[in-house]
Amino acid sequence: MTAIAPIRTEADYDAALARIDELIDAPEGSPEYEELNAIAEVVERYEDMHHPIGPPTPLGVILYHMDQQGLCERDLVPCLGDEATVVAVLAGERPLTLPMMRALHERLGIPADVLLRAPA
Image (tube, rainbow, N blue to C red; front, side, top):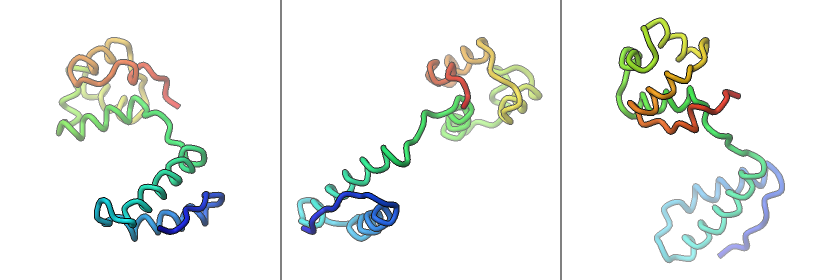
């Protein structure tokens, strides 16, 4: 197994990602597989520090649930009101109200704490 160096720069990061691509199909238990896991841990630490992923926005979660459940804008009318309101909410032009959040939580199963989160 190659010695795993810390990632200090974006060039180091890119090199680590390239090495992961080379090792991605390594058979479990092989030295290459162990190297893959070690590099992945170093990359994860670097990403946590330099490329953090923030929490999802309420709109992002709504769009995700729509995609996952095969819903269209019309399907949100019972949760958000009329079609114009649905369009405005999905365009980010209108904020969610508490009744809308409750309906989205109850009907689509979206966690309430995510819906209550203020948009960035």
